[in-house]
Image (cartoon, rainbow, N blue to C red; front, side, top):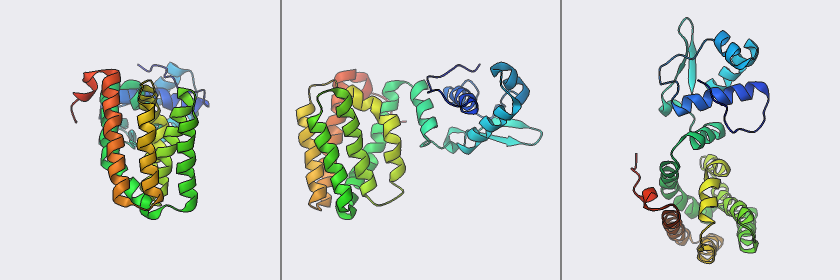
Length: 243
């Protein structure tokens, strides 16, 4: 039932949590279904009961399961999972259809990122502006896709942090897990010169405290980014349902 994921090497209980969590997210164990007993998991994975209990505690903390006396440990509905948890995001990425996954991420970004840019234009401190500008300069100076992608992620993260609103920050923190894939795909295109112009427009609007300009520039950037993915991955990405 449990398949080994592509997670980095971790301590034993994290590896067990990783394998069980991946199985839950993939749907091998359905909502409301009971996990195998502690002893069964011990035998299946060749680990101690202490390790299994710690792994279950980890999954409980992420909202995937709940344990009740006499009824075992059951899978909770996805609506109750901590969907911004880095591990949950990674399991989603590893088990989901890529086009559907990317489409949902763009829905989130289009809903939130223009507002974050506008708020950053109002709230950013000098250190925040320096981080955004440094990231942009890293994009402009990048000679290889890997460095361009790293700087691009840093640019968008810095904008969310520059809101000075901690409720925006978890979105920034998830970027390195979730958006590296889409940024890496987009970096294969020939649009980099245009992307730099668009990122600079966002930067300058924030730096000059032009909230509406930052919002509009971000909308343009996101629309063109989605169009780039459509061209690179094909029309299937654009036709995904908005579920």
